[in-house]
Length: 252
Image (cartoon, rainbow, N blue to C red; front, top):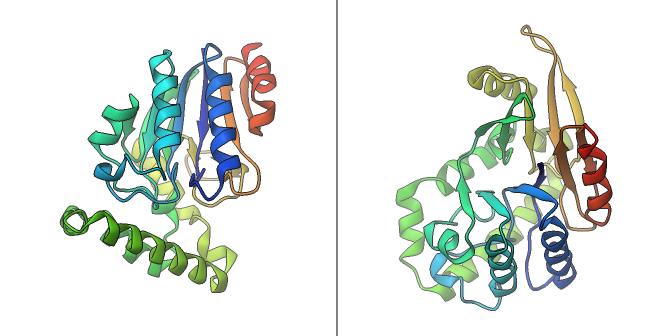
């Protein structure tokens, strides 16, 4: 059956329209696709599984639980905003946590999935911050703080991230082509699907081993972005056109 990929939804109750659109997508996916992959930054921030009962997260968790209870398989990858997602989230939603990167066979084509931030190696400040965020010892120190302290910390990090984005060049914030080639070579594949950069599209890339392809799933800040894969190929579309894309890729 058909599989779909989304990323960078950055869901928060401050943007209820995006939560509604996500719920609608899950409803459309039921019975039409086999597996939904969320490639990081499902949430604008995640302060730890012990905060999952907060009204900030409850609508999204409930939507995920309805979808998985109805038979839809959903795999979620950590992003740079929700890197504290853990077993409690998986148990509450029925989702599976996905390693980054993750290799799968996508209708006969070996394909690598990643959030994509590990490939932004030209942004040295961000890469240093990423190493800290992914350090288990640092995470345990953060999780030992109160929920209120963690919420304040998350909101401060959001503000800092927005300020930093304002002065960095577009090139620095994009993935490094050499890093992409190295990752694909390491895993023995020629296609990569990722998010993070908010630049949806299909990007060819040359290498000594032959042509490669990088597919970017866009963010959900202003609109929506879904990559649909089936026997008939790949379609990068908006959530509103999801069922039409499913019909297209089913014609294999």
